[in-house]
Image (cartoon, rainbow, N blue to C red; front, side, top):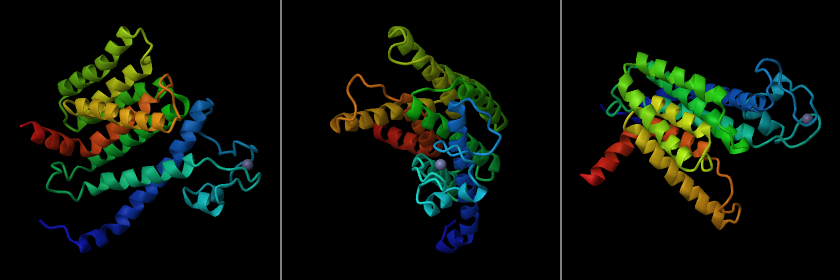
Length: 268
Ligand SMILES: [Zn+2]
């Protein structure tokens, strides 16, 4: 079955809707992360962190408001963090990438399962929250990872994944960090990494968990060397490793099969 340009054009309205949904979820994630840090409820209107004025709905449209306001608050003219449009855009793009898999019928066995796509959208949204929070505050929140573990197990169970496989993957992910925690007496990593390792296992299963762990270390090394070269960090600096773990998990969720095929192709 070929997939031509006309199929793509006919799918454009769908992709546009998925992109807009992604932008809105990204906007919600921005707001959630900010409120988690200040221990506020999710309900209620957004305020400008600088002047504390309430933000009108027309100044709160994902991506568009940032462009119209040229990245400044309407009232106090202080700069709005680039985090907001970046997270919105990244979430929108990732949502479209997840949906694109629906058309790759050849390598997407469960093509008819919209539930599987929905699962990926939920997993990616959770991982984006962990990513931003760790990047900004060097902390992996249990309030996110622990409920996400239960959610990942339940969703994967209903989608027909092997529970034993998921639990083995969780033990590998958690055990990997637990070992480092014990050896270093909690100096290299924190308890949050152990729980994130368990969550990664429950989301990805085996052997994908190993691919994700390897990828996180490769990503971490590359970024670490780049920052060292740019003299932005010293050897002793804190590294937001949870951000690399969540980024690697997103990559393996989307392209895990392809990475595994490619890797096994090299070995055998
Ligand atoms: Zn303001």
